[in-house]
Amino acid sequence: MVRKLTVAVEGCCHGELDNIYSQLLARQQTLRKKVDLLIICGDFQAIRNVTDLGCMSCPDKYKQIGGFYRYYTGERKAPVPTLFVGGNHEAGNHQRELYYGGWVAPNIYFMGNSGVVRFGGLRIGGISGIYKDFDYAKGYYERPPFRGHSRSSMHHVRAYEAFKMLQLRTPLDIVVSHDWPQYIENHGDTEELLRKKPFFRAEVARGDLGSAPNAMLLERLRPAWWVSAHLHVRFTATVQPHDTLFGGGWGGIAPYNQPGMSNEAAAAAAAAVAPGVMNADEIVLESPSEDDEPAARAPRLALNLPPPKNTATVDALPAANEADDAPSTPGHPAPAQPQPEPRAEHESASTAQDGSVADPRVPGRPTRFLALDKCLPRRQFLEIIDVDVPADAGDKDPRLEYDPEWLAILRLCHRHMPLDEAPFQPPPETAAALRACSLPLFPDACLDRELDWVRANVFAAGRVFVPSNFVPVAPAPPPGTPDSVSFGLAGRSDDRSQGRGWGGGRGRGRGANNGQSRQSSDVPWPGPRPDVIYPNTQTDVFCSMLGLDDQLTQRQH
Image 1 (cartoon, rainbow, N blue to C red):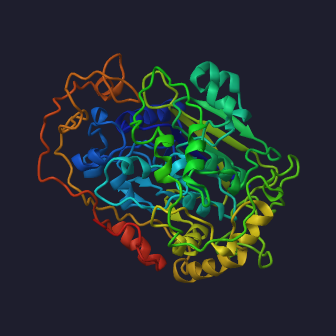
Image 2: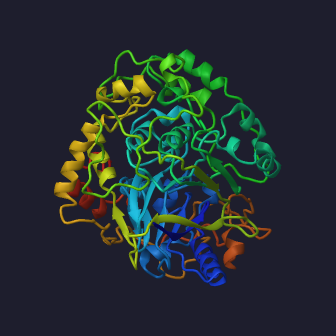
Image 3: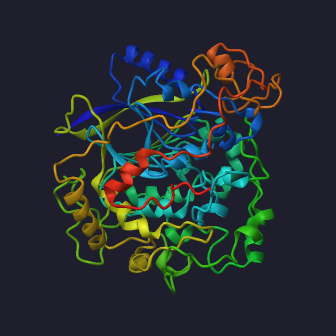
């Protein structure tokens, strides 16, 4: 038996929380239906102060404080539990404080660089950022103060995050990403998509629209729903159980800085990528000098880099074009586990023998894909869906819960976290699976050991809710500060550039949506200049719960 949970999905936020919640409450009234959860698919822009603006990944002329700070200070409260992943236009310092996830404001939860949580019977996974092949293999080398390319690279998804998500063995209901999975356009109305966005045609023809890691994850995980944003258009697709979305596996994603690639080969690979056609209606918010010229920077990014310091190298792995990396035959998917719902906490994650790995797919269940636009008038940016949950998951007031399997995966992968620019490589324990199924998967026995620890030390008393332990740790502007204030970062006050919900004019941007005029760019910051990054007790409490040392978010200046 199943019941329905009502979930609202929003595309790109761009700091427009007031407008999003207003639209959501209006939809509730129209439908006469309570929304249980709001999911926002990135570009959330949790901007608290001038330093967050300075660390934000977009040209300075578009930097405005936005409306999030009112929720951060408690002046306003989210009317619906809200969950979000990061996009590519965020305050990277703020999200780095909450690498494992946490509250950015009361009732608003960031899923971290990757994560899995539970809510009212739903099991929800998320992965933040966008795919850039010249940064994908790197570790987390960025350190404050964040300048230049590091402001953007913090939002480029890393192989380590995809690796962690691949370890999931039990079914997911929803996966949230900012970037679309690569090839997903082939499973929907491609011609309708190209009619709306004709400048995608070259990328669709080349097969490089969207994220290759997300395609690999969708192929492996096959959740009931996958929701995304980023491309500013509504698009739906369905991946049937026997469809092969991405057959290349781990070896099918070839970053420029892969082991053994010379600088010359990397430069040639980068130069071979044909430039996409720009949408004349949009503004590219990442500076080309930072992100969009991989060929010019390839000799620095590609090896010769030192070997990884934090992982052991797997020797003699098959190349991407060898037989072991061939796509699975459509119509013959890997054997799936029989149970359609996630296991109860007291059950074993796997009954398979040592060396084997379980499959998270639910037999016969397709994946429904939904992408939405940005929050602007006359755009399709908000949609309400009903998702099946077990009938016994009938919490009257659903709350976020920790997921035992994900906590076990964090413990299992923690010692392999890459902390420098050298490329991440899967640990030796995953070599057998990589050769057999093209994916670097720990044997189930390895995960079971960590699950036993998690159950004994975290879930001994039953379900564990995410604690409501939000505390403001950074200064914020005083009440009444208009959304459009830039504190001197956004250039001239008469700048009327448009794009992605930022500028003024013709009904676009915060100025039009909130009825506010643009403020002078020389309004000073009202108080002492804040630090770049703040110790966040949420991360400290989370790491302590799992017995992990906080090796990434420790403040290294």
